[in-house]
Every structure is written in structure tokens, then in C-alpha cells.
Image 1 (cartoon, rainbow, N blue to C red):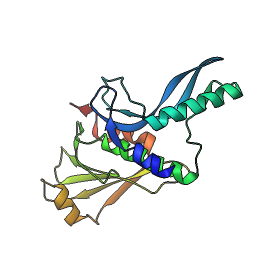
Image 2 (cartoon, rainbow, N blue to C red):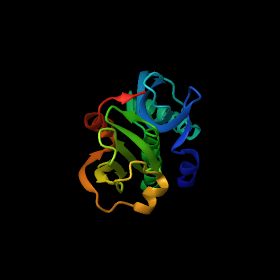
Image 3 (cartoon, rainbow, N blue to C red):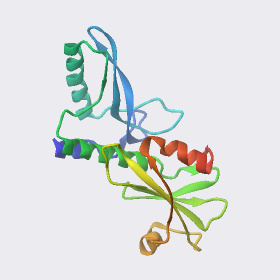
Image 4 (cartoon, helix red, strand yellow):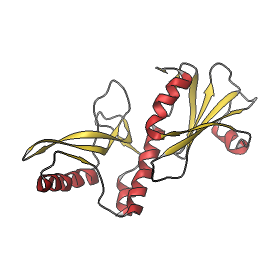
Length: 200
């Protein structure tokens, strides 16, 4: 099952609107014999645009939804959280793809006071301050834990105001000041609080 999940659930695929889609999760309605139900935390691809309500369900997820619907009807329940019904190792592989998809959707994003310069390996964001271009910020995914997916948020100073991916790799700043640790579900709000609203 693990290789199936890794092959099928790429962090980046296609949204239902045809644009680039990033793996994330949402609650989906599901028609059951005993009423209108819902499945929580279903993996889908969506482009992340606030103007787009489209999404695409991966084929492996669609078949799993059918199994969950049968399970819900057998138990007579209307709500259930999505699960693979697989081993913990398989679920971790899925969680890894989910958090990578989460990070990739920030690519090229700009806030009032900072902009995302680049994404590294689908687990790290590098942002540059618009107020002081020598100030850079890192959002880096930490190891998985039973409590969920967490990211460290830190800051470093670099005199080079034109930092590129290649320069960063050589630099690999060791003089970072950690500003905190944030849960994946809280990253969006934290970035808005830190840097202001998203700019087009």
C-alpha cells in the first residue's frame, strides 16, 4: 500500500479547475442510504486560490471513499474521518505527501511585508522581508509526531539582498534565530499575522 500511496498521492498534481493543484484535505459530503453524510480530512488537490472552489479527488482516495461509505452505512453513522485503513507506516507516507503539498502551494506567494523566495525539497519555505531585504525567514517542517505535523519558524540575516536557491544551499545559514514552532493547521494564520495579508 505504501508504494501505491507514494505513487498516487504526489504533493503536486492538478486542481479540478485545470490549474496546478496542491495536496491538502477538506470535508466532503457523501450520500448514504440513511441520509446526507460527510467525510472529514479527505485528501484532494486544489489550486489554493480563494476564488476557486474546484478540487480533484485522487483515484486511490475515491475508491477508499467508497469503502468508507459502506462502513458508515453498516454502522449507521453520518460522519467519519478519512483514513487509509492501512498500517501506521503507510499513513506516515501519506502525511508526508500532504505536508509537502501544503508547502508547495506557498510558492511565489507574496504578503504585504514579505515574499516567498523559494521552496526547498517540499519541506522548507524561504521568505524575504520587504521592509528590510537583509532579513530572511525559514519555515521548515519538523519530524512527524503523534500530535501532527509541525514547522519551525526562524529568522536569519544575510547582507546579500538577491539570495537565490543556489546561494542559499552554499550558505546554509547556521546563525538562525528560532522564533517558534507552529502546527501545520496554524501556519496560514501565523504568516498573515507576521507579514500581513496576501498580495496578488
